Length: 160
Image (cartoon, rainbow, N blue to C red; front, side, top):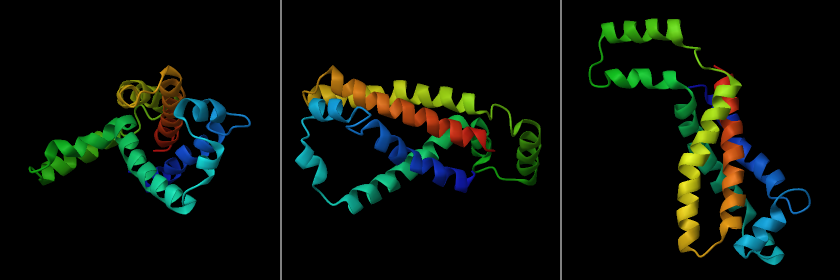
C-alpha cells in the first residue's frame, strides 16, 4: 500500500466537495434546497471538528478504495494463517509478474464509478427514502460520491 498516495487520495473528498457543493458554481444551492439546509445552518457548527472528522473518514475511505482498485493488494490474504517461505516466494514472484497489471488511471476511474453506483447510491438512496428526501437529494449526493470515488480511484491506481 502506497501510504503517501492514500493520504493524497484522502484529501480528494474535501477538494471535490469544496467545488461540487459550492453555491456559486456547483450544486450547493440544489443540495441546500433538497436537504433543507439554510445558509445560516451551513455556517454554524464547529468547522474544525467537521473537517477533522471528515478527513479521518476520508482516510478510511481511501484505504478501502485502494483495496477496490489495486487487485494485487489481495494476494497476501490467500496465505493468512499459512505463512511460509514458499508463500512468501509465491507472493514475490506474483508481484514481479503482475504487480503493475491494471494500474492505470482509467482502471481506477471505472472502479471508482462502480463503487459509487453499486455501494454509495443504494446506501444513500435507502437512507434518503426513509428520511423523506426526494430524487434531487439522492442525485446530488450520489453524483458527488461517484465523481469523488472516480477521482480517488484514478489517483490511487495511477501510482504503483
